[in-house]
Amino acid sequence: MLGLTSISFRGKTCTEVIGLAKKAGLDGIEWGGDVHVPPENEEGAAQVGQMTREAGLEVLSYGSYYRLCQGTDFHPVLRAAKALGAPMVRIWAGSVERETIDPAYMDQAAGELRRVCALAQGEGLRVSLEYHRWTLTWHSDSACMLLKKAGAGNLHTYWQPNPDISHAENCCELAEILPWLSSFHVFQWNRGDERRPLCEGEDVWRDYYRIAGDRRRNSLLEFIRGDSAAQLQADAQVLKQWESAFQRTGASK
Image (cartoon, rainbow, N blue to C red; front, side, top):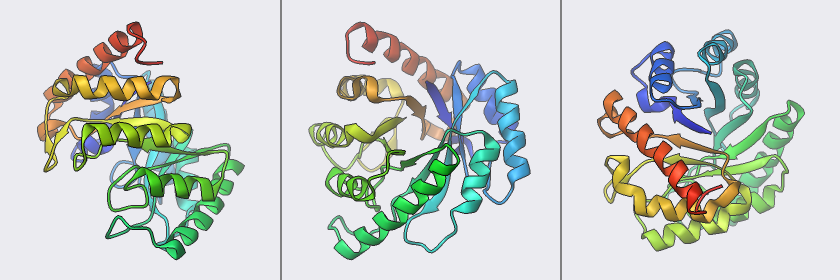
C-alpha cells in the first residue's frame, strides 16, 4: 500500500488531507495523533475513519505519540486506534540523548512495550515502533535488542533512512531490522535534514526496496519539501513509478 502521513500537512484539516491523498492516487493515510486524531477524542477518530473509507482510502495506521518510559496511559491511544479503524498503532521507543544503551532503561522499555503489545493484541491490533534518532531505535543494534526483549508476536517497526549516516550504513540497518519490518516512511533528505524532491533518491531507495523484498507492507510519504501540495503530487507519482519499476526488476515485493 502507498500512503501519506497526515502529519506531513499538520496545518490542513482532515478533509483537506483526504483530498490531497485522493488526488495523489494513494491508497491510504497514516493518521497522526497530535493534530488530526488526538487520542482523547474517540468520536472524532471514528468520524475521520469513516471519512477516509468513504473517500475510497484505507486507514493504514494510527501514528500515535505514545512514548515508552514516560508514565503515560496507553488505553486512550488504543481506544482511538480502534475507533479510527486502524490495523496498527505507531509508538515511540522512549527518549535518549546519546546512542549508547543504558541496560536499565532498555529493560524498562522492553517490559512496558510487552504490556502495550498485549493490550493491542487483545483488540486485534499490531504495534509498530517509530524508527528514529534520539530513541531506542536510533540504530539497529538497540532497536533489535528492544524488539527481541519485548518478544511480542504483534510487534513490528517502521524504518526510515538516517541522514546522519552513510547509504551503506542505512542498508545494513535495514537488513538488521528486516524480520520486524512493517512499513517505510519515505522521504529524501540530505545531511542537515534538508528536504529534497523524492525523485533525487531513486538510487538509494532502489536498494532499500531490494533489501526489504516482500516484508514491507506500506510505503508512506512524509516530510514533503516545503510542505507543498504540488510537491506531494510529484512525489506520489515518483513513488508509484518506483513500485512498478522495482517490481519488474525484482527489487520489490
